[in-house]
Length: 359
Image (tube, rainbow, N blue to C red; front, side, top):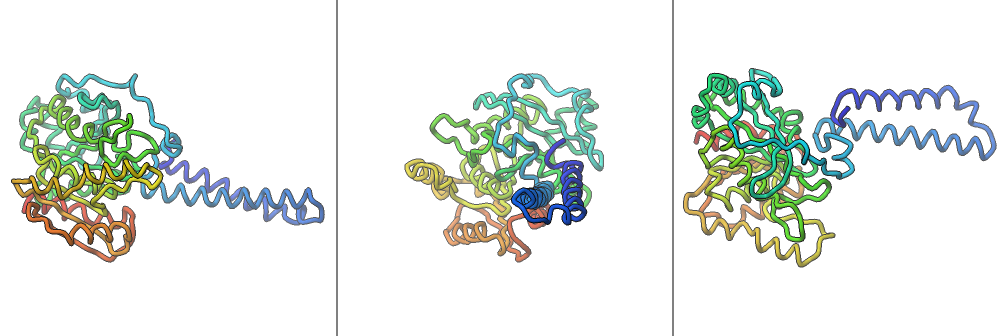
């Protein structure tokens, strides 16, 4: 039973109701003088408040997809070592058919791999449109070269499942497929590979796992080895911290990415204040976007989306756009619809991808 399941929400709501009814029915018995009755009243009221807060929090989490499991909530990184598969052979029809069957004939295949360069062991989900599933079933892996590949990155804390549940990515991609004839293969790697520590898609010093290498080089090598897709220049899309990651990868690795979609992102490392000042200074220099942009020669495209109600993102977006970006082709969309949440982010997915892949 996951934190985002409807049954979890129902169980917490049920026990909250039971405690509330207990208070209503038993209040006259415990509303009597004496320290013992006072302690009982305080205890049941505290328990009721905690259950209500937990129920509301689970509902919000179910909507936004921050934590998928209890281990996510408590910042524990799952151990994948005994689940790692070898991806030095092409995916088979049987393996695709074992994937999750989604709406409109889409299939998602989730595998646990060890990154060839990063040595990170974690999960990646590949979303295949119906025609790609058919191509694999017919043994025509070479046809997958004709598909657009988009890597989708989450914020922190969050899981790839957020794209499927909160952001309704299958509906969004199917809309582009049916109205714009865009055939997109989605790649959804695990971004948060160190539990409660946000690596912000960077290769941080000090023994941290190399998130940047895992999300860039390793994802391309995996898709090439497993699905035969060798067209190197993908598009990359991200929300919140993922928006920073998408922009970073676009300007730092033009050999791997041709277009970026930043939704409610920011544009410089946002390391916690608890981190050493020396580390913050080092990362701000090492990952300064302007330096990467100055070396660009192919003028890649970047679609930026921000909402006026999203205080931190809109401030960072305005700061970033106030600077010159001669080597980027930027399309900026600003709305006034709400804060930092998936309801707002969903608006940007289809127009952002359409602009990147068609314009």
